[in-house]
Amino acid sequence: MARTSPSTIATEPTTRLHVAGIPPVGEVIDLPDTAVRHIQARRLRRSDGLVLFDGTGGEYTARLETLEKRRARARIESFSPREAEPPVAVTLLQGISKGERMDYSVQKATELGVARIIPVISERCVVRLDAERWAKKQRHWQAVAVAACEQCGRNRIPPVTAPCSLDEALTQADGLPGVIFDTEGDQAAHDIKPTAELATLIGPEGGLAPDEIQSVADLGWQGIRLGPRILRSDTAPVAALAVIQTVIGDLG
Image (tube, rainbow, N blue to C red; front, top):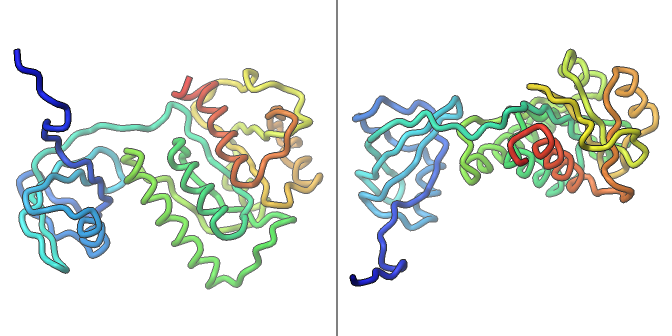
C-alpha cells in the first residue's frame, strides 16, 4: 500500500476568532474589522475554514465566502457545544504590575482556565492612574484575555473587572474559599481543599504587605507553600494556577 506523506495531507485551518452576534447555522455574517485584520495577517483565502465563538459557550465552524481588503463575510456551517473549562472556577485577585508583566499574567491565567480576574491596586502597587486611564487599562486587559481564548481553545471569556482596592476585591470574592501562596505557608499544595469555586491572591512587584496577607488569613484562606523561592509578579499567578489545576482541576 502506498504511504502518504504527512506533508501532503490537507488540513482545515485552525483560525479561531471571537465574534459577537453570530447568526444561526446557514446564515452569513459580516466579520468585524478586528477579525478581518486577523484573517489578512494569517493570509487566509476565500473558502478557507474558520472557528468562531462569541464567549458565551460553544463554537461555530464557518467558511469564508467573501474576502476583500477591508471586508470579509463567512457562512456559518455548524455549531458545537464543545467546552474547555476546568472543573474549578478560580477568581484571581492579581496585584497590578507594570506594562507587559500584567499582560503576561492575564494571558497565562486565561490559558490556565481562570474564571475571573480582579486587578488589585494593592499597598505596594507602583502603578497609579486616574479613573479614565484605569478604564483604558481594563479594556486592554480584557482584549488580552479574548486573544488568549482565541489561541488556547476556550469558548468562554473570563471577565477582567475594573481595578480596585484589595478590600473591594475581597468583597467581590466574598463567600469563596481562598488560598494564598506564601513561602511561609503552613500547608502543602496537596492540602488544597476540593471545591467548585476558589479565590487566590497574587501580589505586585513589591509583594503583598504583611497586613494584606493577614487580611486574607483572617478570612480563613489557606496558606499554601509554593517552594522556598520568591516568584516574580508574572511568574506567581502561572505557578499558582498550575498548582490549583493540578491538585483539584483538570491538569492532574
